[in-house]
Length: 252
Image (cartoon, rainbow, N blue to C red):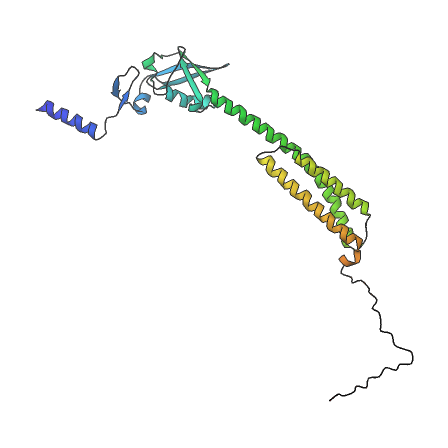
């Protein structure tokens, strides 16, 4: 009866989910351990080779290769999904236990970066360099536009004051701004560089519009200063013998 009771309790534990199982390499089904049990066991030092770098990693002897990857994140900067771990020339899965495949104290493990991850990083690096280059080109144009903007503002104050300026100055500034607009159009930009380029294009367009308005005002400076033009109104002509009176005739 006692044996039956013990078996019944074990079955109840399984039903309640208190015992979890895992499949070990080789197809053996064993009770799943937790990290608390692994950390309380003996520790081993593993020599991890990563290209020209070598890392001495200390982990519990019963850790998995997935556990080892998590520790290597701080040492290498590679996320677990970006790592490939090889022991004795064979790549190991995250679920495989170190001690089950023969990893002991001072064993050597090779770390390789996942090729797909490496390719993504190279592409991202190229994009960042491209964005940086585009930002530098936009900055050069911005410096030129700032200087031209100062000149436009100065001329705008003169024209608003009712003084005419040389038409060639307005045309020259317009041409210089159009050159900068064409320069912005040749810049291949993405991300932040694209935002900066769009802002400069709008600034140049506003300055060109301002110059167009100044050309109209410059041709008639008095109209922009609030002064009305003098117009001579023609007076009606009467014969010299005609006498104008204010006597009104009343009609019934």
